[in-house]
Length: 243
Image (cartoon, rainbow, N blue to C red; front, side):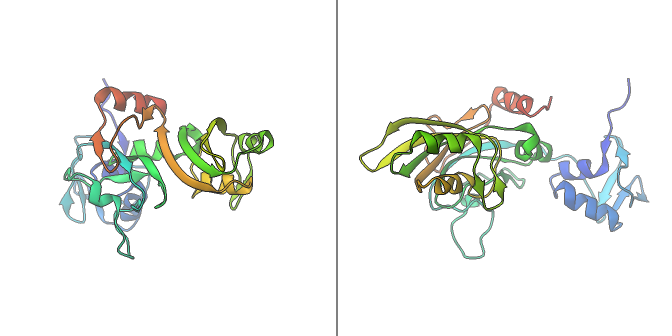
C-alpha cells in the first residue's frame, strides 16, 4: 500500500499555524525544513513520517474543529476590529486553535456562520465552483412585483458585476409596507443580498441567514455556538467533494 502524501504547503496549513497562501510564502522565503533540509520549491510532496520545521519549530497536525454560530446583529464578522467594535471572537469558545469564519455576515445582519481551522474545508465552502447554497430570510420595504422577483432570480448587476441565478420566494407580506422574501444564492459577494434588493427597488430592513448547504439555523439562540456532529460534518464535507 502506498504511503499517503500531500503538498508541503497544505501540511503546514493543517498544523493550524497559518493559511496555505502564507505557507507558500514561508516556503519561498526559506523558512521551512523537511527532514533537516531547506525547501524553497513549491509542489514538494510529504508524508506523515517526514519531519517538518517552520522557523525552527517542529509542526504537527492540529485537531480539526468545525463550529456553527448564530451571529447576532451588531457583531462584526472578524477576529479583531481596529475600531473596537464587538467581534465574533468574543462569542467563540476557546478550542486551543484559531477558528476562522467561513465567509462573512455584515454587522447589520444575523444568522449562520461556520467557523473552522480546516483550511481545505473552508476553501471549498467559499469557492464558487462548489455552489454551496446560502439561504436568507429578508424583510424588505414594499411588496416586490413579479417582475422584480424574476430579475432577482435571473441575476442583476451589482457593483462588482452580474449575480448568478438565485432561488427567490415570496412566502408572505409582513405588513402593509414590508414583505418577507427568501433568497438562496450560490455565491458570496460582499453585501450581495442587500445590493440585489437595492437594485430592484426594495431596500433591506433586516436580513438573516438561515441555511448554509445542509446546515440549518433551526432554534439556535442568538449568540450561541455549537460543534457540528460527526454526521453533520460528514454531510457538509460530502457536499463540497471531501471524503
